[in-house]
Image (cartoon, rainbow, N blue to C red; front, top):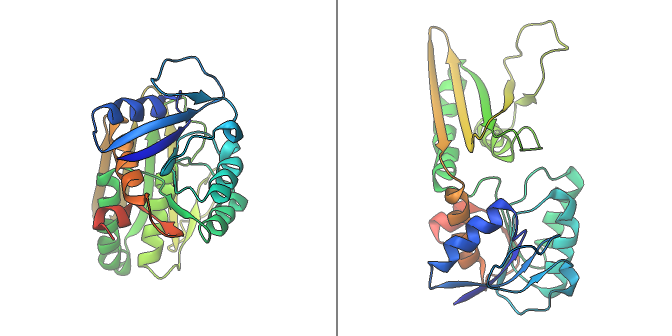
Length: 253
């Protein structure tokens, strides 16, 4: 059985994952970490990460970028594999993720769902045909009104996937309000919508002369992300140092 520390255990995703694990005999949450300890989770909860001394095989982090530096250092010093699901990281933190992965296994994914990770591959195949034929590429993401970062980490991952397919020759545009000019053919537009209780919608649009092709993914509950995180933790336990992503989980490599 894989033993997991849940960082951000009393947040929404932490509670979703705690519920999923109860029904999975191959994994167990042995401890949680959160800034508040106001729920009966059935496992010990620490309000100070460094006070958590429970042995484990992996950590799942679904919290805030403000805690990421501490999480990385904790896992590095204890050689504890980390499933890093928190988005909105600064460029400096992304670099620290890279550095940490040289000493311990780190799995970082902007989106843990199987559907999104399949979409990442599909849009690369489409870009090689459509963008090469002059189609413009745009991404529109929609999330609930409580989400603080924009654009979403998933939208950026989709943009990166498109750009990679085209030899990293494109740049990203997040705001056109201060511009009065035609669209640059080498830009990927990324737009964010915040409102209501939208769990997570992502549209990748290929707009060409007289036709539009749209790839869409809608998440109807956060359970899809929680399930992916649990599977990632089971995959990462016992892995050697390195930077992994959900494509590794899907392929089982």
